[in-house]
Image 1 (cartoon, rainbow, N blue to C red):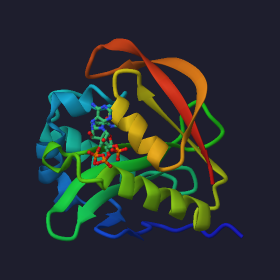
Image 2 (image 1 turned 45 degrees about the vertical axis):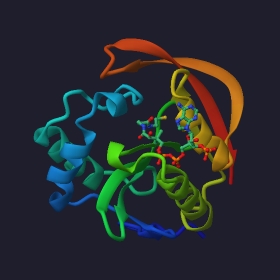
Image 3 (image 1 turned 90 degrees about the vertical axis):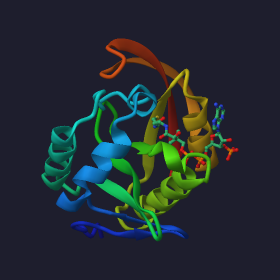
Image 4 (image 1 turned 180 degrees about the vertical axis):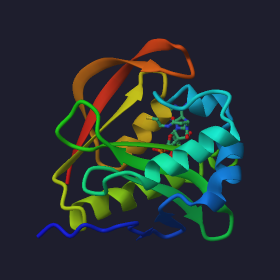
Length: 177
Ligand SMILES: CC(C)(COP(=O)(O)OP(=O)(O)OC[C@H]1O[C@@H](n2cnc3c(N)ncnc32)[C@H](O)[C@@H]1OP(=O)(O)O)[C@@H](O)C(=O)NCCC(=O)NCCS
């Protein structure tokens, strides 16, 4: 049976994945205001303002948890370090996206968060597959996804990057849960 969890929490070795809150707005706006983060995503604006973070928190609070779930990645010592979310786009399966604040890159946090979120999606959310895509000039995200168990489907889509202001090729991947 599928149990609908409102505001699910996921614990990993160093992180708690939890619903975004009002109190996260200033911190998220500060970390997200980075061109090298926004340009690797389809939807994040650059510059990224307090109002953008407020809109993000409000939008995620209104999500239908059967279809979409967004998590702040809360580090045990550092506090919020990034975001991971499952959302729906063109596929029958949820798509995962994420970003990590620049001071925290290269410490395995994206991989740890993705693995924890996928485990939750399988065991608690009862999903059978998750898709993901990364811009062709973002090999680091390809590593994160490969390490978490994603495989390339061979499909390359073109999606608009808001921060780049242009269409950009995306390599699609899938993970069977
Ligand atoms: C991509 C991103 C999420 C990685 O976060 P992170 O916490 O530093 O990632 P991890 O430490 O878990 O792993 C990074 C992996 O990428 C690899 N990597 C880093 N830079 C790389 C590069 N330029 N080319 C190839 N691989 C690279 C690392 O070696 C590591 O792989 P490994 O464990 O196999 O050695 C982070 O840089 C980020 O937020 N970037 C901007 C937003 C973004 O790209 N979001 C994803 C959109 S699809």
